[in-house]
Length: 89
Image 1 (cartoon, rainbow, N blue to C red):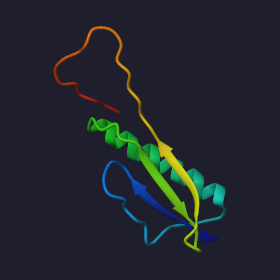
Image 2 (cartoon, rainbow, N blue to C red; image 1 turned 120 degrees about the vertical axis):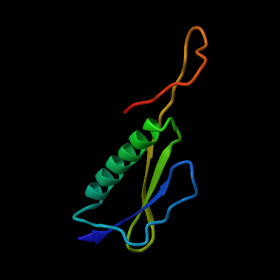
Image 3 (tube, one colour; image 1 turned 30 degrees about the horizontal axis):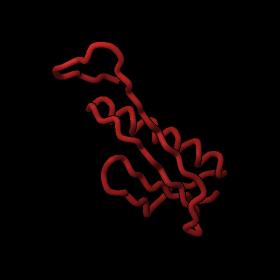
């Protein structure tokens, strides 16, 4: 088992992970980081926030081993839409 730390940036100041969960492998940590980024992004979208979610994964030696980015891009086509839009996810 190895400990990995997930530092999260999602349109706000970086939230540094000082505890970190244990994983059987780097692949398992990367998969968990991707799942977390998707969940945070879905939660943000429900609030109308389409900011990127970036998770920097660090190992026990404090070395960055992976960056996971969940991104939402919306392109509107046709007549412009005015007024509030409620999001749901």
